[in-house]
Image (tube, rainbow over all chains, first blue to last red; front, side, top):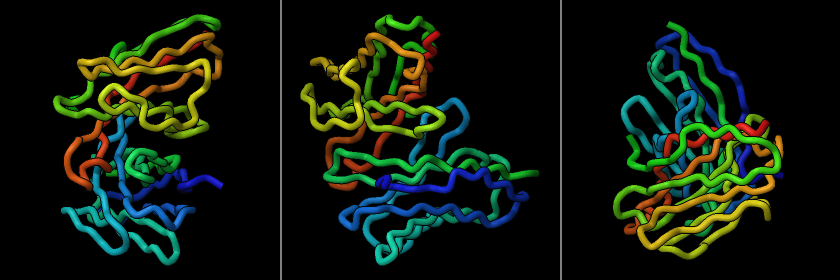
Length: 110
Length: 116
């Protein structure tokens, strides 16, 4: 079983839609969770990070962690064509072993 | 721009050859991580260095090795290359201070390796 599982998509939505991206993780010891955005042929860039359970909001983005079900989500409100990218969820163990999901490819149509 | 510099951007070589990928972390970051990203495997953690010392190992093949130099730049050496080594190789660095900061990684633009 992989440490982090993510639906690869692709996910295609119209501009302005609310997007929900999801991951599950295997180890209840994981406490820090991150979301990265990766444009084609570029390196991943950090979007958000959360600690333990709960929600964190940053502009149009909301990250949510449900530790009871080992489920992490990223919501994008009022999605824009510029949000079209691959989104990677990630977690870290002991501050030095990072595990990434395989990424969900998102396409926001104008 | 993340502040992490990787060279070269593209590398084309033949099976059996050896190549060296180079990474300069963000100014002040002591930690360097190497990742391999291929279509079927996603982003795979290879190895981490902290201030010149190996800190953690992931799924790194024995044919691969890395080091971090006193000026904190790092090199990833790939030898006896196989077709399956064709992938994007990313370097990332993370801040040194602050508990949460250690969980933040800044990625370079990557080196695209093609083994023919």
